[in-house]
Image (cartoon, rainbow, N blue to C red; front, side, top):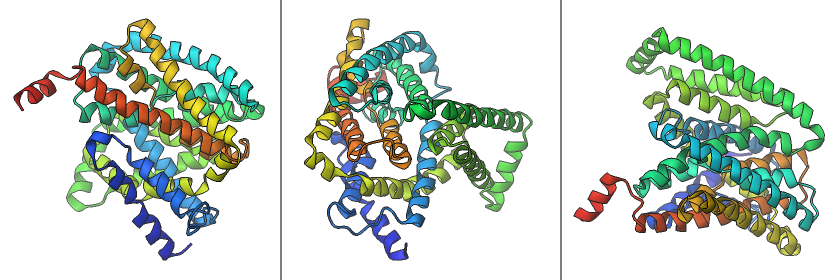
Length: 387
């Protein structure tokens, strides 16, 4: 690992924003970063050694931060969530049931034995991906308000369940580790809430702001890395530690200054480094050498879309169901953790990412169709009619 390697990673990471630049495409930045990693990895140019210990450790830090930011973006205080919580919960559960059936079918067809993992993948949604699309397109109305809690619940539940299903032989160990991480996070949440209510946090924030201490960033990173250490010790993914702590911070209320600092650290360097590293680890050649894995990826993506658009039976517009199928964090976590634990076959992690890309493409199209179909907020509608 050298500064030259870091320079290459930082430079090619710009490919993510480049592909995401045209807003009408609605391409997530991480897609370009994954593609960049594939380009410089052993599959194409072979400029990046994804097995380098230092690079892998930096990627793990980026992974923890990415999941922390994703958790902090769950809109736990948004009144829109409460408005559609009941029907959103019903639909999330219904999608889970359909995904469970499809998971068994796909696992049997491809003879992988990963029915539970596939079910979690297809049932998941990505709040971190869907919410920006909703905001950028100014989507609104009752169908959107009902979709938001569905996405938030599915995102949270699937991230918590993933460690239990990715390695069923050690599910008890994973369950105990999950309880340990969630218990520690719960205790931290109580502490954070006490600091907020007593005014200690606000006073520390003011002093830090005046004297440029960046205290909140330092403390949150210390806590995040401490939870990651607990997760490693308990033999569960640092994904859970990052996401759970992010949700805890969101429940207390993330200060805007901290949000900007975390955005700079994560989105400016360690996040892109993780996705570039992940792209470099994917064995896309196996998709070519073994078309069954390519078919598996397509089946997972299509299955996720079908499970979600089936909510048309519960009066959800097709465009909203298709948007809710977007998955990103869970399949990326599954690919990363599965490769680390050696529980996935060579080429299977790439298949999981391919399935996610299918849902992202469908979500981009569905978002545009929803906007054209009139599912926009009143302010957005007035803006468009005025223009």
